[in-house]
Image (tube, rainbow, N blue to C red; front, side, top):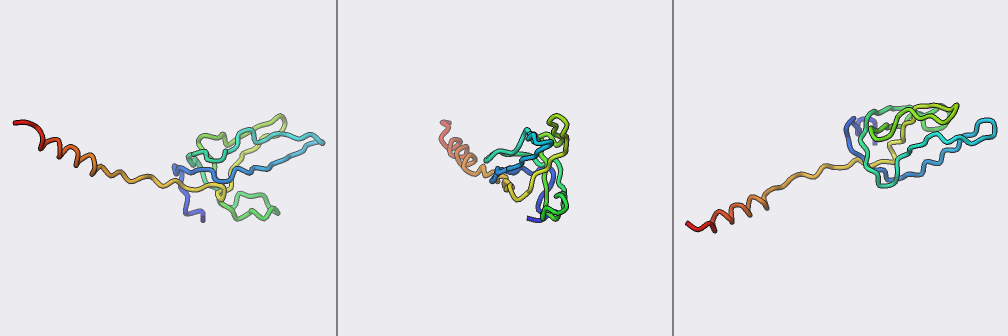
Length: 116
């Protein structure tokens, strides 16, 4: 999906939660990020970045999302950063269209049965 397919406020579901991120500082593994999207989790987009990937990673032209439910800024000891998530790991949820015709029919049927 392109940058134009997403908008702030869209609800999405995580379809791929393989967030293999291992960062070492001085031979010690640090744990940023602390909070990651989980498989099947429904989230609300709070911001969208195009091309927010790091140079040289091959992901410079991607679409990256942040969410209301997950802090954008995460910290682990001396390491602190803003974390956005690759849009390819999410699918937009389509809102259901409300159809009340069955309820209208039930009410109409009940009106006909009322004794006079």
